[in-house]
Each structure stands twice: as C-alpha cells, then as structure tokens.
Length: 205
Image (cartoon, rainbow, N blue to C red; front, side, top):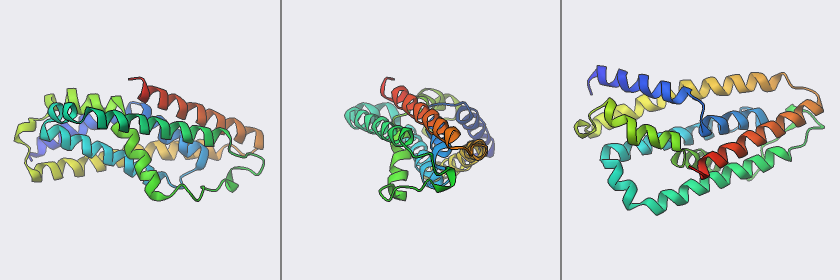
C-alpha cells in the first residue's frame, strides 16, 4: 500500500486506540489486579480481534456482519461473560499476603487469555464503530489487496503494541504503589468494578 495511506491509517488507529473504552478498561483492570503476568497474551488477543475486524471490513463488513449476526452476538456476550468472571475473581482475590503473592490460577492458560482478549475486542462497540463507520472514510477498502491487508495488519499490531503496552506499564506502576493488605483489597475491588463496568458496556451496546 501507499506509505501515505498506511500513515493515515496508523494515525487514526492510534487516536482511536488511545481513547479508553471497554478493551482498555479490561486490560488496565487486569494488570492492576494481577500484574503483567498473562498481560501479553491478553493484549495479543485484543489486537487479534482488531485484525479480524479489519479483515471483515476489507472483505465487506456490512454483508459479513449481517450474515453472521447471531455469531457476533454470541461472541459479544461471551466476551462480556468473561469480563464478569474476571471481575468476580478480582473482587475475591486474597489481599492478606500482599501483591507479590497473587498467583495466576492454573486454569487461566495463555490460550484462555488470548481467547478472552479476542472475545472482548470482537464484542467491543468502540472497535466495531471504528472499522464499520470510520475506516471506509480513511482508506479505500475496495483497493486493498491481500498484501495490503498484511501490511495493514502489521501496522495494527504495531500501533496496538505501543498503546496497550503503555497502558499496561502505567497500570503496573500504579499497582506497585500498593503494598498494605487494605490497599491491595481496595485495588482488587476497584479493578473488579472497572472490569464489570466494561462487561456491561459491551453487553448493552
């Protein structure tokens, strides 16, 4: 693709990604409660969801979305349910032993985290609006080739790596300031509430 088109796309995606939404809320809440353990897998799932929406946009998003409306609806509620589960785990997380002792549950595999991040993005109304309503005004989708899609996907991963990585670092630094059991308990419950709010935002839009 033309370098100018890639720069315009990257700039628009960066602005859209920086604005907090359900996906950012889920990532920040998770890092606040659990630290960076598993954050990379979760963020990869989030970014993968963007690439899938990008592919659907290039292929003709409106037609595909209408054809598989039930599937997308199911994914949307699965993503919301996963966030509710995470919120419940955060709310009940132990605080008496301090942040350093919080261990990732054995059932929370890297694959589960990738799927969780993917489900969150596929059901995220903010992402859907970007690719459905805004993207066609940014680049001429009908001219995008397979190679062009690969280039756009690479740009998407790069931009989201910067944005999501930045949010993760800020959340981890904030988490590091908490040391007492009371502060940890409060942090876990705030993170759980944020995660639950993200679930509601996804499920109700």
